[in-house]
Length: 468
Ligand SMILES: Cc1cc2nc3c(=O)[nH]c(=O)nc-3n(C[C@H](O)[C@H](O)[C@H](O)COP(=O)(O)OP(=O)(O)OC[C@H]3O[C@@H](n4cnc5c(N)ncnc54)[C@H](O)[C@@H]3O)c2cc1C
Image 1 (tube, rainbow, N blue to C red):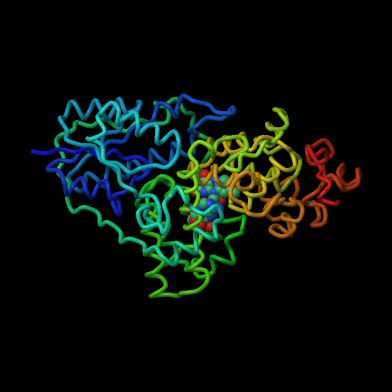
Image 2: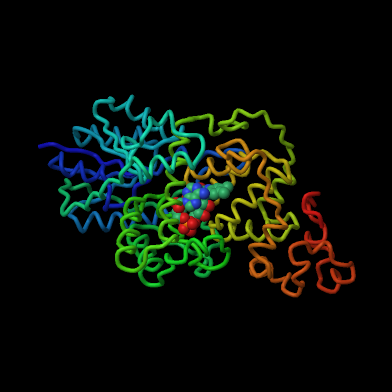
């Protein structure tokens, strides 16, 4: 009788899960385990928690869904809180397992967890699979250490020389010993306070089923995919972009599954530049993961992978204003309010608030990245830190000193001020000309609109590039 553990990590799914698929093939009995990492619950970095409530809520929902799917297949799921090496080793010993199967991660702390487990368990008993990217690491047309430093070169070579592997089917049945599993912990058990998210602000439900519901809506029901390239810079509503990111981050759906769904859509509905662009963006996601793997802990250095020597201000009051959406610059504050209320922010918003923090407030980009780590429901180590470094000018942006002019961006992407008015109804009476710079109104108008004492009349910074 052979037995294997599947250590679920950021791969909370049954379909296209190679670690699970191989374990079912290789062992008579399979024991699925998820460890809620105590190391993430207890630690704060740059003043921000490493695990926030939006993401934890999503993960707990995903675990409930995974549990019920595993049960349908005759299996079960152990969910325990602790350090992965301790928990997995304890079960491995108690249940006399032959090996542990899991998906490999790419970033420093996640790789340390793997090393710790290998040391406690014995490396021979631990087997990893590569399952988080579109292009498999062994199919890249270069070694990962030689991943090009410019995205376009990476993309073109991958598109030309690498095939995308087929998905692994979900197992038909999983044989699992009687595990006498406990209930999955709640947020309160984990000492986390539920965030204000109510029915209106809760955008996402964790789990593989919800991931496929979202895909079915975005692709088949609304056919939003057909116009994705032209709507993806939107700010308001659910369907301007796919919103796949929370499910991809927790692994409720794989990028390969999305890729093959795009191909089915192209065959059955429409093939155009928008359907290609969805794949293009998934290649960006791959890129940041491979860059993280290539550069290791350098990604987290102040000067990033470029090894720059930046000179940031250390102004905690200013940082607090940025975090809480009280800088007085409506386009920044509205995006931060969205993040703080829902755990999500559009890509356009993320680029702007990140650039503002670094280039206009001159604060350390890592403090912004750490705050995103706490708040984002879709937090992904490589995508977050890679994008932050990119915008801060210490990452993979080939353009020197790219600057997002917040006023130009706001005018371009929120010309009528609908987005800022959505998050700040007190701006609803402000005319189009002043809505993104209310402090430029006359004192009489500020007073008439009740804004004279608000941050909007006294912004934290007015950059000279804005040319107001
Ligand atoms: C400062 C900053 C921080 C970010 N932090 C994260 C993060 O923690 N987690 C995360 O998933 N994304 C992050 N992104 C990338 C991007 O903003 C989000 O993936 C995207 O907004 C999610 O919305 P969507 O799923 O509707 O995207 P869509 O536009 O529908 O794109 C489809 C998918 O492609 C991938 N993708 C799109 N753009 C990017 C990108 N620039 N980099 C990497 N992958 C991309 C995502 O997986 C996304 O779900 C960050 C971007 C910036 C500028």
